[in-house]
Image 1 (cartoon, one colour):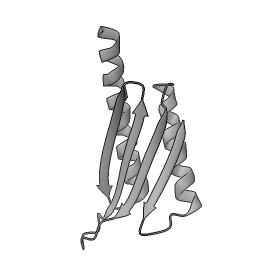
Image 2 (cartoon, rainbow, N blue to C red; image 1 turned 180 degrees about the vertical axis):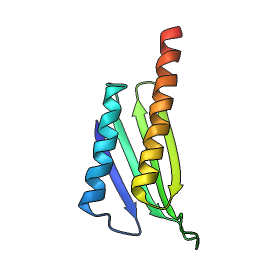
Image 3 (cartoon, helix red, strand yellow; image 1 turned 90 degrees about the horizontal axis):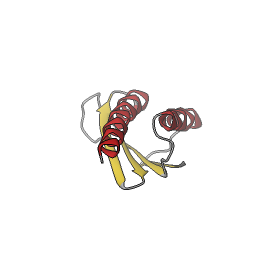
Image 4 (cartoon, rainbow, N blue to C red; image 1 turned 180 degrees about the horizontal axis):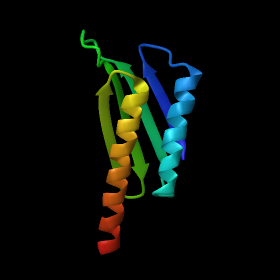
Length: 99
């Protein structure tokens, strides 16, 4: 799987990038034909403390899955987005089995 991480208007540190790659590579357990993942990290301009946004676009054969989460930390929003993608992968696999 090709993983591209884009941090918009800030520089993400290597610890965060390694964390995100590790979480995304765990998705291969559920579906091993993942083509690529595009991750967008950005800071929301709101004054709210929950201003860290993670958007993940996952390309798999025949579909494109997307998850977006906004929380207090990038690690938390990444965890929630990856969990949402895991559920979407399971749903996609059950649709393939029915067809």
